[in-house]
Length: 332
Image (cartoon, rainbow, N blue to C red; front, top):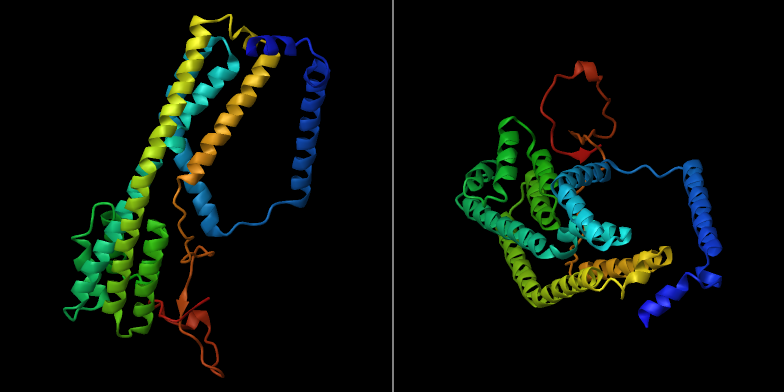
């Protein structure tokens, strides 16, 4: 019945006629051109520096990802095109292979996030125990970095190098938060920055509470990941069976799927593939653990820590002041 229906679509008038399809395509092209023209006239808002940095990182990551997956996706798409003789099927197969990790590889990403949070908890506990020996924060950080987890060790080594090069502790900690790029790390680094500026008591208790909170977050993520493992496996089985069924019909029963070889059949097949892609994207969104956004971000590329000027105090000329290390104070 499906084959007969698809075969009769090409001869039907109305919505599936060639004139209507060309009209729809022309309308989409004109509408898209007008939208791009309006964007060009009005312009786009200026993005902060940290958003530009994130966009650059995403672009570089996409280039590396394309280098690894691009060739494999092209080969798979070409094989499917030769077997089925359907351009839409070849393109869909290539896109599926290219974005396989992004659609069905959420488990590896979640495990990496859990390892990062667990490493932060271990480092926070080590820092707390080191401070307990009446050691300052500047001396405790290099001592605790030696026993840090491998996923966190490069960032802590860079932090120690900045401290040895006389970088102010608040600025070095801010750069550490930018490198880790995690909301859980922002909470820990913010507590260290406040203590580095105010030098108040109670840092051990704060670090202990933050480490406990990080451990609880890791336990929660492990429970959620265990519950979603069966659902993720079921989705992968459904995708594999659907693709194998379509390929089997196109190879061993060409007459049954012959209407898909027409232009209208390819259009219907593209709609079906689009619905599958929308379903995969929706399942991927459901399987993603929502984490809070980072709050310890900087909009300016260079943030200076200067000594606040008292009311009534004349400002000295910049050339008359000797060069010194930036002092703690307010941001300018």
